[in-house]
Image 1 (tube, rainbow, N blue to C red):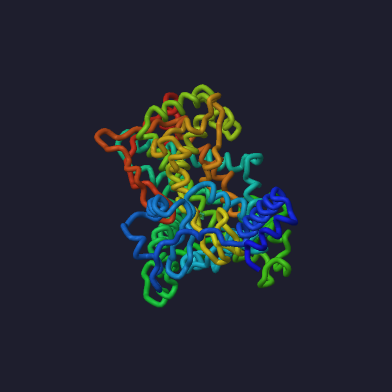
Image 2: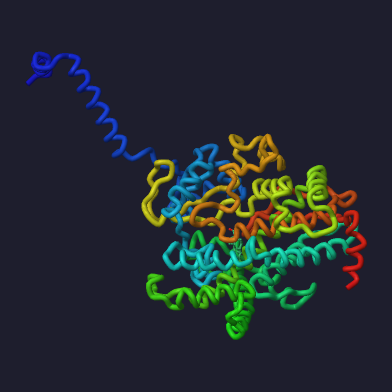
Length: 522
Ligand code: PLO
């Protein structure tokens, strides 16, 4: 039958307007069906070679967060690369990041198994690096609940931090107005907070055990990134690798020390309130039923290994991230003395100099909070977060992503996106205040990540940062030593993004100098 004959036949049976409606409806149905069935345009991908993956196209010596930001300008906000044989999607804008972290958070809540972190965590018996599983969820809940014990209501953290700040102020002031690197003193104070929090130890300056803790931690920080090429090419494990050797040695020292603490805690555990994180974890372990069969695929529940790795991780995460953030904030305050003065004016007005700052003052100190947020925005300690893995087939922004794909969220580019942040490279705490002087937290500010994998220590960290910054600026003014250039703000990428060493001079603020001299003589 010819089409001409068909159309004249149709026209004689149906009126033309009916045919038009039928045609439009059919076209719409066709469009909707094909829209759903046809795969969306795939995620743009960098070229790749066998074995090497996209490595030859990732050169230039830029650190990953800057390299990915640069590639995003060419390939768009979401693109993929092959890191070795691992298909890895890199997400550079907040809309897609929210997809990965929150809207489809469960799909992307997995973690890759990596040589270095497996070594660090006894094959994923921790929270940050271990894969998504029912046991992980139960473990994370236990850690979260244990942290809450030291949280806002309890005031325990406040006492611990304030004691450490006292020591830090005395130490900083004893260095006087000459220039010095603040990093060792800050790290020592933050380490002391974590030692008290985790196993109730408080160390004096120069204590051998404290030095041991700082020593192994430095060793892990130094080796974990340098030995990291085996994470991209695991077959390289067969070659001698001095970084991996040193990492193992540091992990051994750490485990010996923490095992000893764990045994001591077990021996002295009582029905009373938990003394510290180890106590809280041990009690939680007993409550959740040790060796609970239904929890893990391997049939085991929260084991002593989990407790040990949690303590080790609380340590590592607590020290590296908090001390680094404090050092970034200090570096920016040296660049912007007017911001330091404004924080101090707020402190003088709202708290005064007669009493220590407390957690309950936080509501009264919005500008100080903004300074901390701006520090976390402009120099996120974890610029590409920890890699995520798709645990099931899913999608990002409508593009299909297969199970097993790794996903990197480039928080750096989100925190420096000029579409959302005016002059993103400028340290400007006011961007976290609205027109009425009220605090605002924009949706594209995610320094702790978000969703099921959000940092479990976030509220603890925020409280600690607040108490440290507030107490330091209440008592001390920081200045550039005469003739010194301001700190280099470029940073150095290791396990976290750290500032390069810089020099600072301190002077006690009115009222604190005499007190400090007395305390310093002890
Ligand atoms: C730091 C050195 C420690 O000895 C071990 C450790 C444990 C947890 C890690 C931490 C290191 C670095 C910062 C990490 C943290 C878990 C979450 C945190 C990666 C390696 C961040 C910034 O995501």
